[in-house]
Image (tube, rainbow, N blue to C red; front, side, top):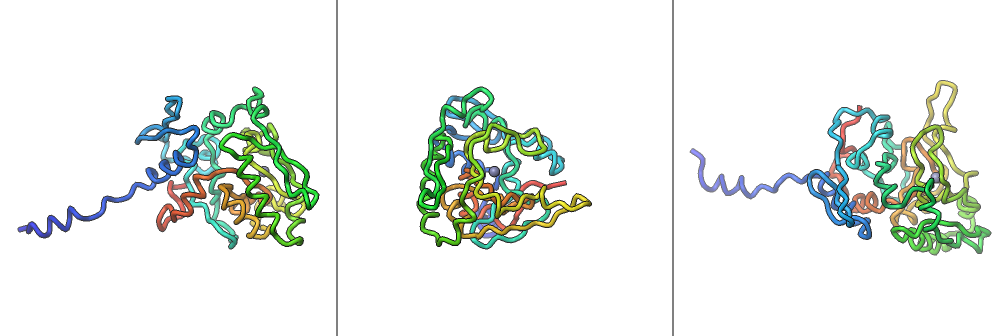
Length: 268
Ligand SMILES: [Zn+2]
């Protein structure tokens, strides 16, 4: 016979955490100008728009998650914070899966001139010859980048060659060899000096295989991360000059999310 004591113990067990709920909480908190809340099915925007969280397709391959993602897929991988940049596991690209309608609604459609009218110039390491760069004012990305610059300015002179000249910010374009819009099309990304950078497609050998490589110091990445930007050096499909504003992924990483697992959704 079960005792009442045993029942009490059972009922006191913590309710299993729902990692997707935590991820969506972080998403709403990261974009307070745009997002109001979420429930189990939808992300709810401040203007009342409801955007489905999941498309119901549980068996998507990695490539399908890139090409036909849903909001949930954006959280497929844990973003690894910090200066210690290690080769990621196969296809581990935290932040590289993006549900395009989410970004179009937030930052605007560059093809319709909606991004260009929200740009603001930011001084880019001017004492080191960096000039000025234009980024979006949406989500105060301009202010976040200015805060990054202030910290980068304190780095030793031998870091300048990784940063200056910048390879660009706003560019109304798709990602190379894809039909997917780049975060540069939303003016929420910056490329540092491409001469010291590695890009996975450029690392490909004759067989099409490539070995991950990064030469950009982790100290630079950590400064960007402190202000809500993620770094392409932390992707298996490395793009080590690339930074983009994704504060939800940084916030989740600070929380140690998701516990124990690097992957949230199964990958095929
Ligand atoms: Zn880039």
